Image: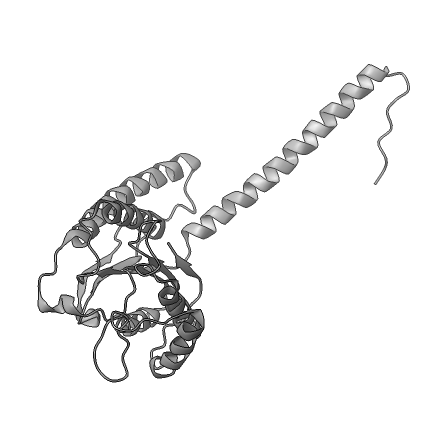
Length: 274
């Protein structure tokens, strides 16, 4: 490539101005290139596959959603979950109640209907109009979904099923969602205190793991009998109802360590605790 040489007849001031103009020109070209790249990335995000959201709401005596702190935390969490995961037609959201009969306690089963029309051959004006219409439809549908989910949050369980907390029973539900091929995201709004009576089960109300080492030991042992459920690699988030000043007796870190190890051993992807 031939090197650009400033003609000698130009003054130094003129040369500086030309250099500044060239630098500005190349900067604008670079910005335009990356702007085009960002646009393609956004298009790719919009066309990603469906998300299958599973929300497990604890409906046992140990979780009181009427408590101000819990109500606010869980309402905010559910709103954020819906905003993040409801994006396009085909996204699914199921709500299950955690209690004695968790796997049979589906309270909601929703599938997104809002659809973005094909704008690949449309003009910029038509494309913008189609995107605006889609966003309006999706916003309305999100609002309806949010209302229905929040109704389930405050629903009371006064039946006998509130005596036990069977979180293990959520695993076949996750495994079934995994069979759809969608990206599965799981949220537990629970204290995660497994409490089921009978041989081969855990009752953390009676006997919780004493430390992280025992939690890991129990989780790995339990995973051997639970690995029959192929849960895939879902992202799992545990949203606990405890205030920041909760005692170790109330918010036992060994309990959440148990679930972290169990889910990880079974193949879960990202694990979060809130």
